[in-house]
Image (tube, rainbow, N blue to C red; front, side, top):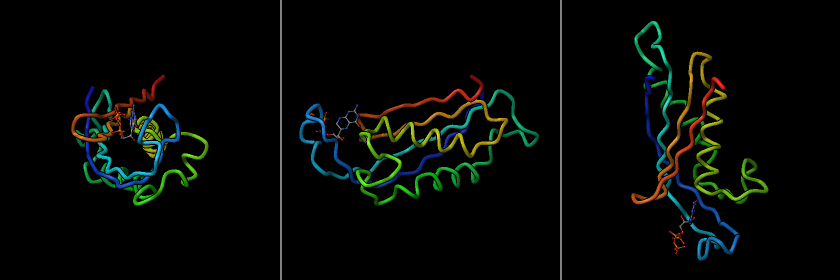
Length: 126
Ligand SMILES: Nc1nc2c(c(=O)[nH]1)N=C([C@H](O)[C@H](O)COP(=O)(O)OP(=O)(O)OP(=O)(O)O)CN2
């Protein structure tokens, strides 16, 4: 399986109103570093998974609606906690919706900080 990864980052604000999260129940900011990987078993006619510039454009397009937003007020996170896990799943599904049919999978890594990150993998063939 081949993979092509691009990265971007997004500044957001949010709160996690559950005692489980301790001080993070309050409103706070985060700069999330997002890595997105497009996977396919066979390369295309150009010998690539996806064009790097095109991939970066897809990732930016998915992150743009989140930039500088308070996710507590964002419709895509209405009624659920905007954990790093939830952000990773949101980005992966949004990228999958934009992916060409030949793409076999999408993987997303969201880095909360250098010591902690979340992964979310979508198998588009199952
Ligand atoms: N699995 C997850 N755990 C936590 C998330 C998350 O998105 N997924 N988010 C947070 C907070 O938003 C923030 O990133 C960290 O807050 P902090 O209070 O520093 O949390 P820690 O668990 O690192 O520290 P403690 O003080 O031990 O709670 C938190 N967790």
